[in-house]
Image (cartoon, rainbow, N blue to C red; front, top):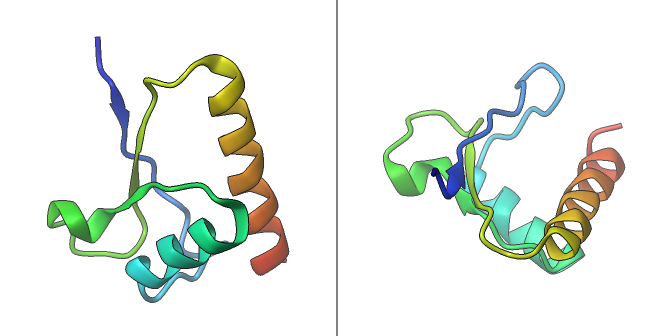
Length: 75
């Protein structure tokens, strides 16, 4: 059973230039920590890694926080 997801954010909707900065801002704003794609030698700033070992309630809060951050930053 996989423990990780490696989702892509559409660069036309989310024009992230620096994935490390994106991850830091997400952490500071929403207290949600994921790993930037460049941490896995992904060449573009459009991916990040999520581990889904926490319980469903924790994951739900994290996903809501990510959605809130993306909506506020990239409207």
